[in-house]
Length: 382
Ligand code: HPA
Image (cartoon, rainbow, N blue to C red):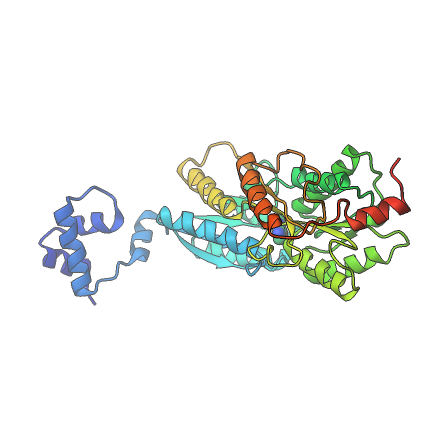
């Protein structure tokens, strides 16, 4: 097997110089560097980073534990993490805890036993054991998406403001019975989205009606059942908010099976945008999370922690974007979306321009959304 000594001999340099080229530990003159890289290619040499790890006690690797990797939201987070890690010269070890606290504890231990330099974890609804395991061993860790506590480094998107904005948007279109399909109990995202829902109702003077809130367990099947349940009520909602992308799929399935047209029979606004949300008919009005940025920020926080273990923990919240399409059923010149923490103006303007172009190509919808109109007739506003 080719060794560093062989490479050094072929390139006519010292072993230390080869090491500096491979590890970036010291600047090397460009012609010397080229000679070393040429010798490496010629001889087919592969750098053994494990040997280096024995010396430095660092593996330049990050453990990433994220459930539902196939969910486009988490896939994009993963892309953000991977890009950030690669840029910093780190590789990733990935595990899926399947949102199961026992499994989560196990995979976190497995990753740690591979001696990753730090961990990035999207915690389950019961993260205490896993967090204690990492804390006891002082593993540099960043939590993402679901918050665990301000004593940790963590990053997530804003949830409360954006959901409040969806409620206000639907209320301004005339809806007084707005349902929410909420996520898995125990997740901070679920709690905050329910808080946003209640804040939106409050700000528009609408009462909170417990029968309009149903748990969809953060997944499609749960949301399908929840939607059927909501629509079976004596006074069903005329507008629905789904609290994540998987639950939007479930809600759409239930609405299709029940023969309800969106937005004619019921308006729909979703948390989470995804790349094919504008291919649905109608196109989905949604809150877009900065998923890649969440991943990139998690890596940045972790690298900062590795560089400065004693610095105070940080919680970073990133803004979302309101993507106004047609499933909310509001008229062409319909209610302006309330500016809020959810909407960086530039991104919103871009979406609105895109929306205007799309709408221009379509026939004008009725001045008042049918679902809201029917609701107003049944349940006139005070
Ligand atoms: N958290 C936040 N957003 C999401 C999730 C989640 O667990 N799933 C889909 N979108």
